[in-house]
Length: 114
Image (cartoon, rainbow, N blue to C red; front, side):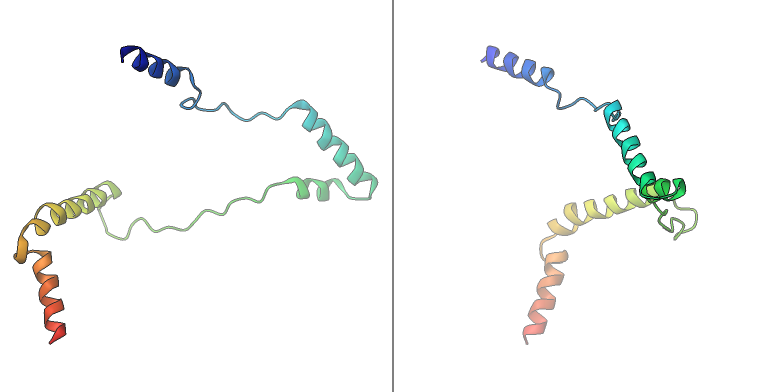
């Protein structure tokens, strides 16, 4: 059993699944191909400005997000309040039996049937 665990630990440690990939670098051959493409476009009559515009990636527009909906409350506080309410729901209201959420829902269902 110990040998199997040691083997699994070594297998996981030797794999590259948890390694952050290095920055992507273009090979020099692709740069030469781009120059050849530019030469072909120039020979077809395109200007340098048109060639550069066709190669440029469109810029991402920043999303307009309002983060100041509630004054003087930061996102960490709102997240903590949200998790607290979820915990309150699961640990208090769900375990109250007929006096909790289940009782309220059952009352609404039973009153709508009459």
